[in-house]
Length: 101
Length: 162
Image 1 (cartoon, chains in turn orange, yellow):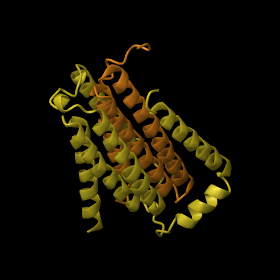
Image 2 (tube, chains in turn cyan, orange):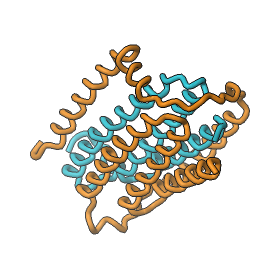
Image 3 (spheres, chains in turn green, red):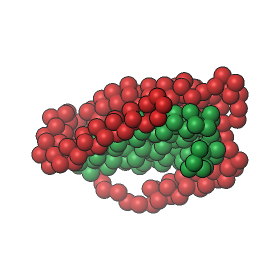
Image 4 (cartoon, rainbow over the protein chains, first blue to last red):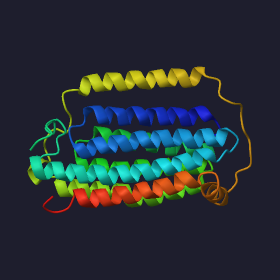
């Protein structure tokens, strides 16, 4: 627990899992969950480097900004997903390849 | 004892993250995401980031995860529950992800990071607040404007009859 590498390994695993979700999921909301995993991995890295770089709090600020951006992104993405569902009656991201209705 | 709890939280986080991406039922994935976010908040506490952990609980678990569950409930048809949730790229995606993970592991273990830091844990709320209102005042205001814009945009996009 007092070793930077452990946190980086955990974040790397989380990132890879999130990337796997983004690549393989068909459902738009499931893709969004993969993106959340990736953002959390990045956040762990920010906070871990902040702690082991001499408790420099800039990393905490960046983690907070990432969390706020994730909230904005989730709200807008879900609004888009609901619109796609209303127009196409599915949220399969493979179906949503055309810009027109 | 602390080591034991740390490894327990780490394993818990990774297992529930695996459930998020591998589960076939979307609602179960959302619940597993909730446990993942809890685990990450625990890791933040191990990293002495008490304020970030609190915000993680408030915004991620209280806000984003609830939003995702709402999205699932608004868009899931009962008949589509048994549909396959993955596309044909599963093999390629798995290979790419594992390969990327291995490269990250190699890079992390081969790099010499800064030495061991054994500082005393401090509470960070006051320091983070001071930083937000001095050094990071402009980004702080910009991000509040961005949140307002995202809120208005999301409400406009999901309006009835748009």
